[in-house]
Length: 404
Ligand SMILES: Cc1cc2nc3c(=O)[nH]c(=O)nc-3n(C[C@H](O)[C@H](O)[C@H](O)COP(=O)(O)OP(=O)(O)OC[C@H]3O[C@@H](n4cnc5c(N)ncnc54)[C@H](O)[C@@H]3O)c2cc1C
Image (cartoon, rainbow, N blue to C red; front, side, top):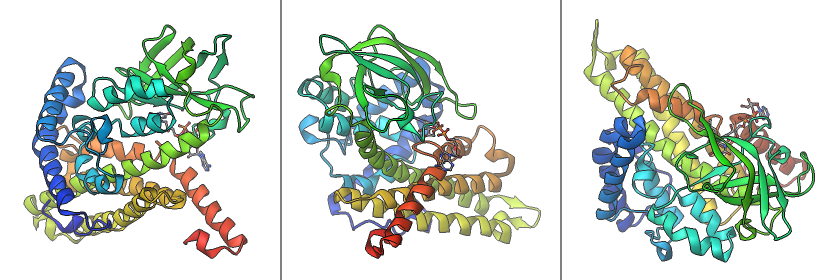
């Protein structure tokens, strides 16, 4: 990185080993993953082959699955330490898959809430990259912001197994996944806050079907899936049953924070491209960098990056300490999504038509920034829940709870 956009990462100073790992991850992503993005984005057999090569190189470089538990075959890096390098790894959307950290959310959830059989049968294979998992909560006819209205149902069968029926959409990575965690109603009726459970469904089960891909802003995207009477073993229920919202909340807090770290890496990349373009492209009155309106783009983007980074690391620190991070994760998620959209938009503007064309990663980064403001809960959901929590604290006279 050549500019000052990364000068302060807001985290506790990582130790020498983590700094060295960060440097190596950064180099791997810049020299191996980013140059392969076009083929990886194209999907199909060629993309799968390129990913296999990258994964082998990542393993050989000692960078495989760094944040996954060591007893399962991962690198055993604690979350706080991993956060120091997740930005570099996530500078490409393909970084986490290439370096084996993509299953972190599924492995964490299954390790904490899966039965002995689930842990025994799947965890090591997930960490090794032999199988893949995805997560299906959102449904076409139910607002994702109101999961208690989930319509997918799981009925208990006499032998204790479950029969699951329903439709989910925007399930990332569903095509090619071996397992999908499905949120389903196991008791009560849609609208009840109780009675929702998570079930781990092997996608090879009869009745499971990937219906279609859902391109996002015209490019590759998540999938719509159907479960038509899929039978799931009793021990594939996560947790105690009926506790889906609490498990999902735990997963989402970690997932949102991870995404924020990766969005910082992607925004930094767009920022670097913008500065390089401004410095090297001459307009009718000399270099673009001399135009004050271009300087405004650079300043605003740098300000967004620099003010978002400490917010994200504040959420990381609280999560790592096991503290209540709901307010900080909400702030970080909204700030990072807006920041990614703003920085990529400015970078496109400074590039002119070239920023919209096929020769830079800016269109893909911009699509990511736009989607960021909706996935894992839209801005409005986080804004209202953070504000309500802060205001509740004030009405109780509990200033410390609001940290506002
Ligand atoms: C690229 C991508 C990947 C995704 N991957 C997954 C995945 O892997 N698994 C999965 O389960 N889901 C996934 N999703 C779905 C995503 O989590 C939901 O789209 C999101 O939670 C919003 O739900 P919704 O689309 O049903 O919008 P709705 O809940 O219908 O909300 C629509 C709009 O209503 C407004 N709104 C909603 N609530 C409020 C409020 N409280 N106050 C004010 N306005 C409000 C907002 O403007 C919001 O954008 C993905 C989505 C995208 C775009």
